Length: 415
Image 1: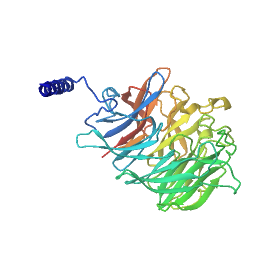
Image 2 (image 1 turned 60 degrees about the vertical axis):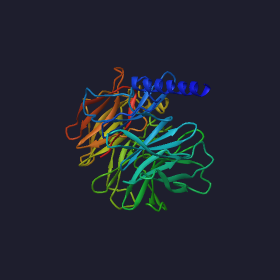
Image 3 (image 1 turned 60 degrees about the horizontal axis):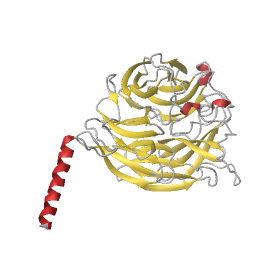
Image 4 (image 1 turned 90 degrees about the vertical axis):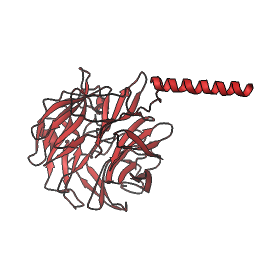
């Protein structure tokens, strides 16, 4: 009798479970999958006490009626994330109790699936090595160690294939400044890493009168040389923003913000662009673009190379930079930014009137596709977050997908 009663109870429990599942009342927490789409978007939302990061797919983003939302969609990440991509894999790097990197792909139905995980100590700056390799550099925090950990991540097997612990640069054996990596470009079997010197304990930047790039062999990761140029300040800024870009001919262009809002504690040079010609291990002495003067006082924060010598760029508005505004360019609700087209050949800056004044962001991994650049814009005081489709040839933009959240830190297309 006891056996029959137990068997009956188990049957009832199974039937109730099936009924709940079929009714749609049960949904696995933070693991909704959205079918259909070759675009992978990172979505950051604001909760009552903290932000949450999601990855989700979309079938299109160039549609003003489309809403990018985490409601019933996507996979919530483990904590606040950086993002990167190589080949057909998109990575999220969660900074929580345990630092975990997760590689995602898209299945035949257009839904995200997890390909694998890795544990890591620090990953603060990312770049693409090739279609099967993502490069991540972990920077030292708080002083103590001044080496950076360069890691080559296999995008197919989701593993750290190679590591190299090395200083990016040292003035002398007694040098105690951290060298924070800001951008990575691979070209001609070499890896170019920009950085800025800072005090790891205070985050003070006492040396802002020179641009620095250390060149390594790739994939060997042997340090070859560090090149410098005193026509502008350090290249890039904290937060995995894009500070160097490679053109079709292999030339590399660099972005120097020279901005308090970009996290610098002093400013000594104009914001501008340098060039490293294809295959060279030096800055081109014949090229310097003083963006700050050409734009009437705006400072160049980050950009995407759109082709044919054109950049889609985020600039800080003139008159908004002072010592009391340090880190101001990382706040989506601080409206000190605008978008513009920068012509590298003619050295001109053309504002994009169709995009409102807006806040800055961490990351800013924009998508370049079929002559358009897709960027996340969070405007205030209107309070709208939206993706804009930008035409670099005409310096115009149209409203694309609406963002239900704070911002989209990264946009990728998996073919």
